[in-house]
Image (cartoon, rainbow, N blue to C red; front, side, top):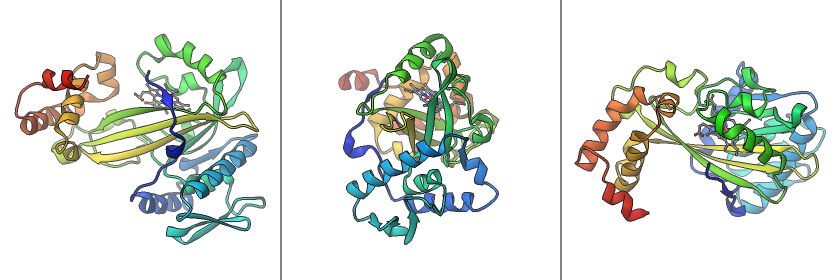
Length: 289
Ligand code: HEM
């Protein structure tokens, strides 16, 4: 499991999708979808408040043209919006935090059996699950569907979580090939029909980070999701070749988890046509090692 230190300049990042995703979040939060996107369990208000303070401090320093403090308000300059960042709040601190960033935000508290439990979450990019079902779950239950979690990762991860340091933020990446477009998927991915054309397939890349909050000791997990059409990868043959090789080598359980059966035919044809061969080029892969 490849974990690395977070580059402090790149903990929270933005791109041109911010405005659209922000408007989608407001629409969800102001309507019937509210509880599908935001959940805060009892006793988590304090850590959400701390998370908001840390985000505000970070983004006003790192992106001063985009975010400005004005008294007890933060102003989101491109959206012409303002929110209180001190009590009394006009929205719950977790909602404000979610509106300020492009990442999904998870707050975990230490609980029974020395395990971490999801106590609050802002989830605008679900990848096949429902927040309402999983709020309150411990880490191992959350990873129930993940191949090898129970056998290989659970013990070491539970230990690892106990030792996350305030100044030791770490990150990891995850790549999914999605058989259908779109960033918001609550239904399990395997319930989608097989992709029919290359335009159906999107690459979902997640950049995830973990850190501990200094005051409350809660652990914060962030997930920044990038969606790109598969056809964008066609412009980067080395990257496409690498992905092709990786997906062909998925163990069976990983292939099922990553719903390879739903996109593999179209994906293979696309790789063959763009790369002009029937198999990933091992020479190309070795050159990069
Ligand atoms: C270092 C910490 C973590 C590691 C190594 C890890 C690892 C993984 C892996 C391997 C997967 C399968 C997909 C993939 O390849 O990424 C996964 C999925 C997932 N992880 Fe984590 N994870 C970590 C932390 C967390 C935390 C803190 C949460 C939040 C409570 C979380 C929630 C999830 C969820 C919701 C899924 C999707 C499960 C599904 O398919 O239903 N992960 N994680």
